[in-house]
Amino acid sequence: MLRHEFLRSLHRLAAPRTYLEIGVNDGRSLALSRVPSIAVDPAFRVTVPIRCDVQLVRATSDAFFARENPLRHLGGGGNPLRNLARGRPLLGGREPVLDLVFIDGMHRFEFALRDFMNIERHASWWSVIVFDDMLPRNIDEAARDRHTRAWTGDVYKMVPVLARHRPDLVVVPVDTAPTGLLVVIGADPANRVLPERYEALVEEWVVPDPQSVPDAILGRDEAADPEALLASAIWPDLVRARRRRQARRPGLESIRRSLAAIVP
Image 1 (cartoon, rainbow, N blue to C red):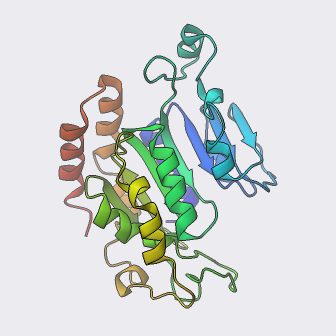
Image 2 (cartoon, one colour):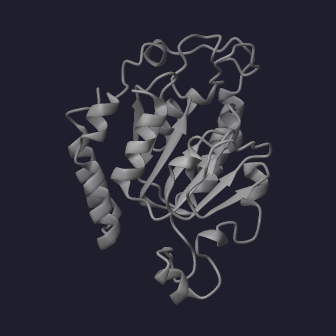
C-alpha cells in the first residue's frame, strides 16, 4: 500500500477534528484533509487543490512552535462558543487539541525529535501522530547528507528512541511504500522525559554518515501490514475515547490489546 493511500484511509477512520502537517512540499498529503488544518513548511509549493480550511505557514517548524498561540487557527483564542460551533475542539477551555498530525519535515533525527516534542505539548493520548520516511530500504537512503533520489535521512532513529525512552507510548512502524511510516498514539503533554534528555539523545544518536541502520529496520521485521492496521479496532476505539474523554491508561491498554494480533 502506498503512503498516501494509507493516509487517505486514516483521515476517514480517525475522523480528526483538527490536522497539522509539518512539511508540505506540493500539498498532496494536505489535500487529504477536510477539517481545520495548519500546514508548515519554509518552502512549500502547493500544486494540487486544497479542500479544507487551512493556514499555510511559510516557516520552519521550530519557528512556528515558538509563536504565541501557534494553533490559533484551529480554535485557540477568539469566541470559544463560536469555535465549538464550528467543530473546533478546545482543551482547557481555549487550547485546541491536535487530533491528527503528519510529520514530513527535515529528514534528520534531531529535527524529527523536536517536532514530536513540540507536537506532544498540543496533543492528547488519543491523538494520532504519523512520521513519514521511517523505514529506509538501504543505508544510502538513510544518510543525513542526501545523495539519493529517495531520501529518508536518519529519522528512523525515532523508532528505537521512543521505544527505549517512552515505553508509555504505542509506537507502530507501518510497511507502506516506498519508505514506511510510524504511527504514534498515547501523547502525554505533561511528560518531560524527551525534553530533559534531548541534548543527551542528540549526542548519542547524531553520528556522521554512513549510518548504521539496524537490520530490523531495513528488513521491516517489526512493521505492521498497513491494510491489517487500518482494519483493526483501534480507530473506532480512539474516536469513542475522544468523544467520552476516556482516561489515558485504560484507553491505551485497550489499544494495545487490539494491536496485539497484527503488530509483529
